[in-house]
Image 1 (spheres, rainbow, N blue to C red):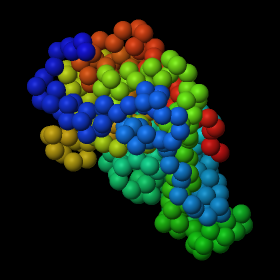
Image 2 (image 1 turned 180 degrees about the vertical axis):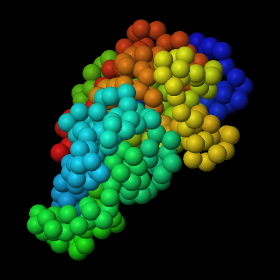
Image 3 (image 1 turned 30 degrees about the vertical axis):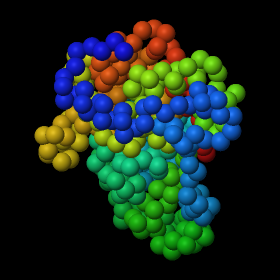
Image 4 (image 1 turned 60 degrees about the vertical axis):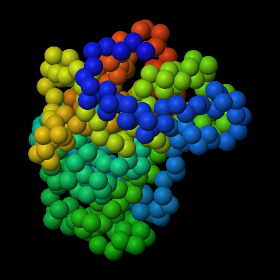
Length: 329
């Protein structure tokens, strides 16, 4: 490995992550196995969503696209998380009610149901509570009184509520239905078929990219079913990551903003890399426009490596194999 400048504490943190993630695991292609999932793999096939009543999911889907949940009747959940675009709006920052601009880049809503925390800074650990906080934030500024009154007078909504077993359109019912719908937005990819033994599901270069992804240490933070989304990590392990200098845009303080603990400064939830080829721009401030640039920066600041063009190309090809084979509805 071509280690760059590194701090002692950063190196030990990285080594601990590598050991806990099972960096030395081999892929089915490496091991020669032809069928089944290798349980030693640091990435595992995406699990299906929990079984929700179809009526509850349909209610959540209808609410997700309802601009009437916002105080100005212009913004829906789908405004910032358009399903057809990969679950996020491909903008650096999103626009909420009355022109309010978000302070962080909108993450994809796909596969969040399997993650351990929500939002870029991981401030919430319960999906329904996270949805409630977004609805009540300046992004949407929901007026629960007027919304529940409107839904109670809407025949389509009241029918779906009754079919779902939710008899009153109150805040809890609305957020419960929304969280059920969002939890179903799982996106299996070709790479999942590869993990299950279909060695032809990805190309030779994509398989080499995956091997490189593991060998270089990317897997130390991006592992599990979500290829991320299951731990916090400091941005800038081997050198300080100055967002304004590196990306041209200001950054945030991460988990520190909700905990006030100095050790949480610049600590963020590791994002899932599923569908990452669809979700530019990158980083929590949306300051990096291309996947290749994001890979180079992460190699440098998180691994202490100057990745060459071929390494970047192969890793990007592997990441593209994580793209959904079918976009949810």
